[in-house]
Length: 278
Image (cartoon, rainbow, N blue to C red; front, side, top):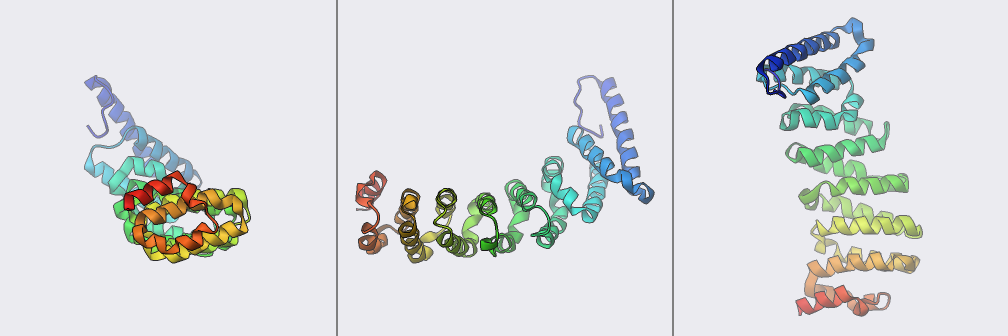
């Protein structure tokens, strides 16, 4: 059986495989014929539809199809990004050979094509095949956090959501991410709605990082932004609690300055954490 058998009937299965092989052969011929270039985008969509519902079980066919997909994607990276979820579904861990071309395309097209499309592609890859994504993590982190001030606020929030997909890998690039976000929130603290959304997500990012090495900067930033905009106090307090959890006793060095602005001693979570430390 060349393709996944979705039936219980051997005769139906044989006929089904024949029809799939015939369709696949026709589509592959169109994709290989330069004179039919105008039909190739549709043929590529057809190829992915066939593979999605009838994944090959024959290794030779699978390899042949994968090489064809690699060739197509090298010539049309935006097409690959639009179809990344389907490609990951079809090929899974075997998508590795595509990664260098995909990453090169992301670096080359950042700022040129839809940022949402690129971020969605990064999300899919980081969640689905982290072992292939990890070697590019530092460069990706630099790419998406450089010049945050030039990005619309909505894109900054999208970037944060993408960074959250890095999961356990976050602490390997926290030195890139955290300083960039500190600078951004200090500049945008007066926009209450966006700033609170930012702080809520920033807290989740910090939970997954080793934040003690940024403690002074983060505490200073919490003070600065709440002085600018008291409406940020609740979410800034939650960030301080993340710091308290990781810093433990050393956090108390900053407490006199913080108590001038934050009602920490009235915060139930703060008191529970302090009691657990003591």
